[in-house]
Amino acid sequence: MKTAGIDGCRAGWLAVTFDDNQPYYKILRSDDELAEILESFERIFIDMPIGLEDENYTRECDELLRKRLGAEYAPSVFSPPIRPALDAPSYAEANMQSFEYTEKKLTLQAWNITPKIKTLDRLLREKEQLQNILLESHPELIFMNLNGGMIYQKKNTKKGLRHRLDLIMNHEEIAAEFFREIKELYRRNEIEEDDIVDAMALALAAKQSVVKGVKTIPENPTKDSMGLEKAIHYV
Image 1 (spheres, one colour):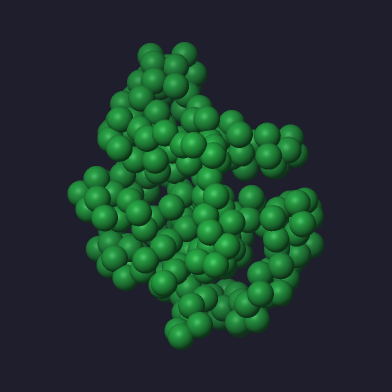
Image 2: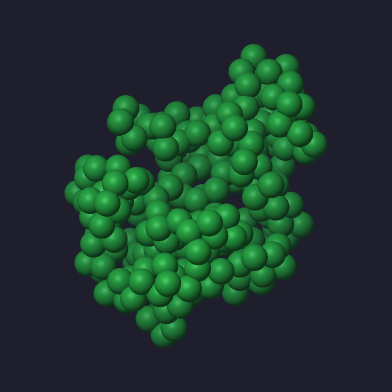
């Protein structure tokens, strides 16, 4: 099974695969490049909300993930826009839509990635076969499981970032080379260091899932009004 991990970045997306026959990474700068990658693999873990609520501010999977990560790391999980706010032309209008349905405003963090959520939503609805390939995941949950059920410092610290890279290198030595090359080839305003380790963690988890299987939060996820699953996937 061909597997990969994808994380959003300022340049667009960073895709990584640790498949034994051809490990590589690629920066995806357009929707067409993203669509091509999505159709090139059989399982992809991605750090981006997929299934959306229509009227509830927070998805069940996000609530459960915050509890799993603990209070210190819960802020790394944010609530995506509700579906009625997805097509809002501005942050102000998205806020109005969110408040009308949920009595809560959309965070700026959620609004900043709304274009990427919208792109994935469109691709998944246009090409239903991708719904079995593209699985929403979360890097901090992956790192927690790689570290025996705990997280070692936050990844915005040098120690935290290095520890996460070491966790990946314990399974994929080439991760060190990928990290170094991407840092050298791309500017920080295109790809941050944490984007690199997150994409590699997602790639590692996707690869491991072939043998270990895929688990979900919640265990029995529901689908949204467009038929997209609302779940966090992990191994």
